[in-house]
Every structure is written in C-alpha cells, then in structure tokens.
Image 1 (tube, rainbow, N blue to C red):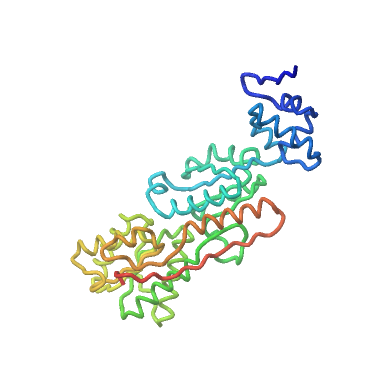
Image 2: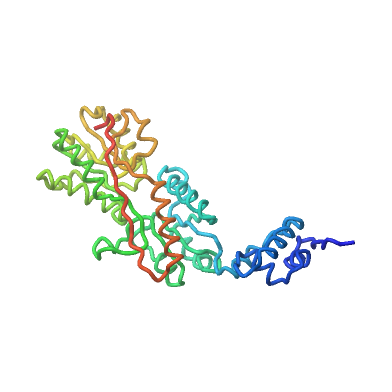
Length: 347
C-alpha cells in the first residue's frame, strides 16, 4: 500500500513533493522554478505531486533562486487627496497595473510626500523587496531617483527629468510632449482671433509646469507676439488654484480674451471664476485646458483641451522599466509621447 505524504500545518513542503514524485529535492526545485535540465517524465511527476498535495511555492525562496521579486513599486509624490481625486493619476495607475499584470508582475503603490520619503522608503526600495521602481509627480529638488539608482535598482520616472531640459537626452523617463501640446493650444487661440492670450501655468518647480509655459511662449512667438507678464499666473494643478489665478488675471488685465490653462482641473476653476465675474465662454473669454480628462466633456461649455493619454504613459513606463531590468547596462533613452488638440465649445 502506498502512503501519500502529508504536509505540515503550514502546508506541504518541497521535500514532500519530491518524495511523492520519486525524484530528488533539487529536481523538484528545478521544475518549480522553471529550470530546463529536467526530463519530461520527472517534470510530469513533480507537477502531478504538486497538484495532489496542493503545494504552493514559497515566494521569498523563489525570489532568491530567480534573483528577482516579481514586484514593482510605484511611488507617487503627492497626497492621497490628489492621487485619488485627480483623473491623471488614476489613468497612469490603470496603465501601469494592466501592463504589469500582462508581465506577471505585482504592483506596490506607495504614496509619499517629502517628509515621508526621508524615512521608510530608503529601507524598502532595494533589490531585496522590488525589481524596479516607477516614480511619478516629482519636483526638481527630489533626490529620490538618484538614491534608488545608487543601490542598483532600475528606475523609470514619469515626466522628463529637470536636468534633461538643458543637458540633452537622458535615460529612464516617459513624458508627453508638453511643449508641443501647449503651443498647439495657443496657436488655436491666436487663429480664432484672440488678442490677449493669458495663461494659468503649472508649478514652476515641476518640468511639466515649465514645459507647458515654454509651449505657451513658443505659440505666441510663432504668431509674432511676446509674453506679457501681466497675462501670466501660476497654479498648483488644482481646481481652486485655477479659479484664484483667473480672478487675479481678470483684476490685472480686464481685457483678457483667452486663457490657456496648464491642466483641465485649473481650467475648470477658471470657468467657475469667469462665470462668477459675468464673463461668457467663449464669447468674452476663450478657455483651453491640457489633459483631456473626463471632466473636459462635462463642463459647460465643453472644454477645448490638449489630449494626452495617462494610460499610455503608464504602459510605456512599465515597458521601459522591464527593458531596463532585463538589460541594466544598456542605454534606455527617454520616450516622448505626442499630443493633439481636441476642439470643443470653450474655444
């Protein structure tokens, strides 16, 4: 009579799988971890034993064998309120999650503002815990990418690093062409006859904020115009900051007849402030946003905006990170994704 080995309270062990299959422990381990030096007969026997016993491989042990964890960390340097309240972040996370799922990798989401990053993150973001790190919404003075790379952990940043704006091409980033998109928006406003084109720019310490302002200036220059500082206000990419900036612009330059907002949420705030001031859109003031978030189709009037795809950005970030993990010594140039203007009723 043959007796089937029984597992411990913690579950069946590798030794019990090997015994039931009639092979050595090393052979059973190679089958479980995808080794190729195993006969077909032994492989089938081990797989049958695994099914009979309900054996589940120890994830930590497999990570040691493969020298990888199958886990990728996404670190977003923003508050929970912004991450879960703004559609851009939701789109990027969806794209990242789908791409990692296709690659059989696990996603760990870390929300970390500046004070938190100085403590636990340094201990966690190592090769013992993750295969690579995706970073999103960094400011210019953030040292986190350099610190992670110094430990030999592959990193991809969502957004063009600040240094690349002046030092030429760099590795390890995915971004949309913010300059191109903003220039498209301003060119459209000029082409429709607007004379006093203002901007509600993003934060000056973020590359996206500066690049979209650069595109605004480029669009004006193409039309033979210069930037008028009285027509420039900055926001923080939030709705309230867009409303406050629009009120300031109206007080400073009552004859403004168009405004390019560096993202859709600030454009929503601007629309609110214009309605509050009794200005019609687009009759008195035309408004263009940037992102083409779902809210752009529900505003009154529907928002003309620059389209970008956060989901595509997330997928491209994962693709670049997996390439970097596979060939860490090779160059992995940054990727710029194109934008396009979506014309609706606000401009």
